[in-house]
Length: 116
Length: 116
DNA sequence: ACAATATACTGTTCATCACACAGCTTGTCA
DNA sequence: TGACAAGCTGTGTGATGAACAGTATATTGT
Image (cartoon, rainbow over all chains, first blue to last red; front, side, top):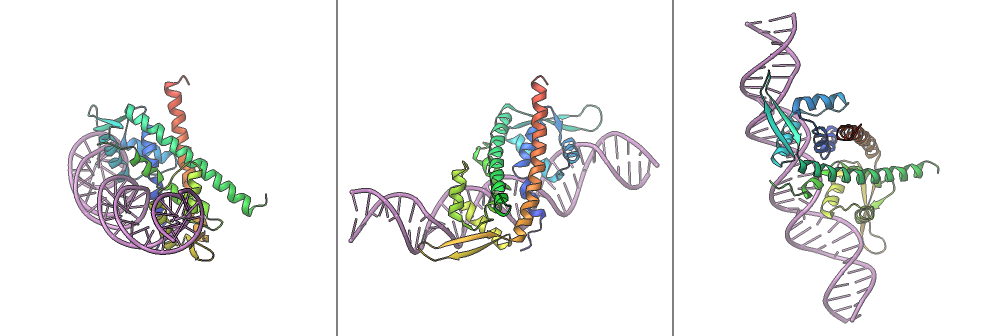
């Protein structure tokens, strides 16, 4: 079957996006802003991916949303909750272990075909 | 709903496991060995996750499997293909960009509640 | 000699998630 | 006034991690 590289890109978003969102929300922000921020950082996320994610994280009480209807366009601002902070720490730990493993593998591979 | 932290751990496996497998297969290895290796590195993977993944990657021709029935237990040895190498490089690139973003976020957060 | 355990893999089923597709309202600028 | 950007909601689908279940061979202990 054609792997359609985009498929892997999707997979790579899993696990990362949660961390991205939780990492953004130490100060309140809204969805659209996060999309643009991410884009500005050289990484693009689909709206149809981010918005549902925000609702899920809110339902799980990792983040808390509040509508701001004051001047102009209505926006939903989110902040991370204490539970969310806790989860973020643990997820970052996992990510670090993974990174260490990947580094070790890459190193091993270099030593193989390279000449060490 | 109860997020059941294990759920997030599952999510974190996504995108990582592919890289782990592709990273292991510069020299031929078989599934069970990879499981134990991973465990030895402080990260445990379910058999029921790894074996189907291997079959998928083989179907996509990112890795190539071959049964070795010589002495003793029959084992299926896998190696990475050129296409697999190509994909691995691109996935590692994505991962690096993600890591950079996460670092940046963490840094920003430290500067906030810490005192710059 | 025989049971228990470790090795090594296959197959089916299910919930979850990224994203496609579709739709809504409000503000801005020509 | 008409297009486009901003900002969000909702439904449907395919791929995936993992639970559950099963198979077969080697090793180890008694």
